[in-house]
Image (cartoon, rainbow, N blue to C red; front, top):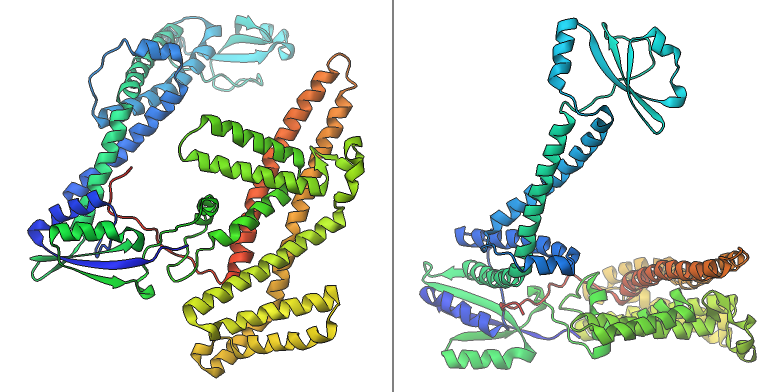
Length: 593
């Protein structure tokens, strides 16, 4: 349900606007309408601080997550002063540079180890004085030919595993040997070792510093971000108000939900503030605040993935929620997986507090739906339940593949017609009953076609009602725009019967995904049974394959079971309800919780 909004307008003397806006923020109920999008030096500084602080906070979070208990105990004995944000960011930048440098030094050190510690300056001096170039090469032992030692000036320096390390002395750049010289770093092994030690030492120092900062200043940083964001919100709102009468008076306008008007009126009476209150007009596009029961509220985050409803229409959360639960269970379609979901959600709820509990409740609901649909389809961890002795007595309760396909199409038909019914209700509320007749016609046509093509119980009556429905569609396409345009709109709308057929066929995915999940589970079971024949390790492999295989199948199937119901909701259902979307969220001038 969309909460009704009222528009409030206040005329405030310009010198009192900061104090007035601060009081509004403390109250936290008015969604302020901003007339411009200006910024000044103060808001830019606050915005810059928030950006930098969030980067530091992200850095602290990653370190807190990776830190071990023994490291924490060591860090508590250190003492560093509170740093500036820029200092922390600079340390993070330097830390990443050193990590890259360390990788390069390790690689260079490994390249130089077979050659030992020598001075490159002596190599250069030898080459300049003699005119003989020293080419450092590496070659596989099995491919190295002994006659090369007699034919070319080669000095073997080292042998390691399957490789030979040697130097070729040559006076010209070209060499007849099919060997490409190595591009060695121009530092000695001792220099590289010293650089690596210095690099590791600096990494350790910076790591300890950043670790200490994250351990001791994370909460202080979070409080600072919250306080700064509140101040930024307040200053931006105050700066972008509409000024009147040579900027002596400021117009403060905003939206307040009817459920919170009592608090706002108390605030107005206490301050003796002059105001004007108006009911919301759809053309003004008021912000949207949803209010649903406990069950439907769980699905608000799913609906918000697409869009908030426009203020001038219905909130569809309550209407699509039961279907979404049913679709999820149908797509996952395995009783065993449903039990896993239900147990997992229940156990996590015992440990996790806060906003995450609503998601875990959703997980439990999805688990319950999957159990029901899994039982109907007769699938348990990829096994066909009719083949199990315990379920043979109730095998008549399970549906076969053809029945499941028919059930998927029946559910699709029900949701499409239900969506059209919601559209009828919406049109009656917002545009009058004449605008709803076209949608009523669609419902009549669909039920008539269902009887003519499938049920075949009232074919003669349905043959008449289908034409009644067509008439309503054609002649009441857009009654507010005149009869001619309404007739044209109705004809165009009638052509979308092909789209309705396509929408209905889309629900076959419910059946297909459930079957694919069962088939993958069956494949996992088959592979696990084959592994039982392996000597000694058979049982271990059997259990391991079952756990890994069904775990992977559960994750893949869960992804499909979430994405495809969203598709059916946001495309097929929303389209048939005439969903507009595009609502902007209600965001009052208030401090962050």
